[in-house]
Length: 535
DNA sequence: CTGGGGACGGGGCCC
DNA sequence: CGGGCCCCGTCCCCA
Image (tube, rainbow, N blue to C red; front, side, top):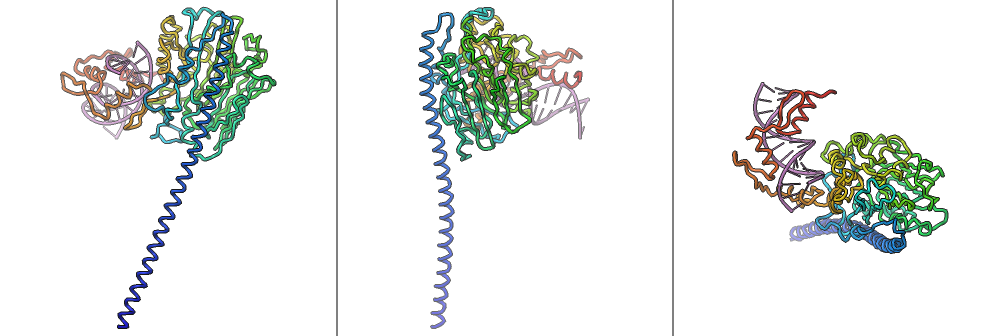
């Protein structure tokens, strides 16, 4: 009996121990999960705060833009008839005409990036608006017009935040250093990346300090105590960069840009990558533009630019009726100071960013002074702005003209080819002309890398909707084009056509050296590289 | 095994 | 939006 009782007691104690252990284990699990949950909640709250902040920023920008537009309209109404700045695309630029399909994304080239290769950077559709940067030649013979040319380039609002902001900002959890911006006074949360906003506004002094976690954008106008409106800077189309926008930054390294005017105004991003620094001397004496109405403007800093950034320069030469509202320069990040080198690693995306210098040297026909020339030759930047150049409306073309084919076509088919009547909407990057601004928008993605159309299945992004549609046959397996001779099927007609050469033995591409013929141009090129290369 | 060439998949981009 | 061309990369075959 005693044994029985003792056994029961032991059982009970064992059970109790087990129960206690189980309870402790459960409590531990609950605590752990609770901690994780709380962590996630706090992170979510942080993200919510960040998003709220962005929303406020956007609202502020919108309201500011409205005010600016009002001012502009008022100024336009009072502008002399010989000087006209068209603003017809402003509304579109502000998003009324923005893309609706898919989400926006920027595709980076592979290589030296820190964000994941398999993750396209996506910008919330709601925050991304289309950018209109269209050079409009009002007159058919604007090329030769010189003085009296009326031109415009309207630049719409684009969410100035780079797409990575959305991904990195909240995650970083770092309170961004607040930028001081006299005119906007809007704290601009930035990513840790070296994104710098540069205004070409006369005498703008920019100080962008970056460290590994924060980026300070100081966007300050020094116009000796004068407000910009009184100086007419806004009237010049140079608001304090409310519409600042950034190209997709394909590179992560920090960038140092020094642009120095003779008055000592400097632009110093304070970057810490010495391998990527430029110093551009400004020689106001080379600024042949007579800014008699804006004497302050001759002091040089209105032509700042930077890599990874863009700058705006604002000119107006009323006396000759030449109006250049804004000049935007976008230079991609990690280009070495020599501008020699591909921004990619051989991935197909890298093709889009060919050597700038080569691009320039192979484009001698473009009469415009290029900013890249300024970089390359260390010429004063002002040469690219010389209004005496009849092509001054193409101020910074080719800067990002990284696609050689596009370049060649731009030269052949751009407005400068004499077809400016029909194609008067110019790409600000390569000067190629298009018949409507929407086409310019699409074309510009060649330069910006913007790819708004994303495949839902593999998340590959495309710049054009048709490309996405075509791509989706890869997933669907649809092959509507069949060869009548061998019943081989293809998803695309051009593939069938190419395949048909197998049957026809057609070889239209002949080697000039050995006469060997090929069915495709790329074969010929490879053949020549391997067998007839001079190197 | 290696290099050259052919076939083809698929993205880029202009018309 | 579709057509068409260009291009690159990959796979395969063959000498």
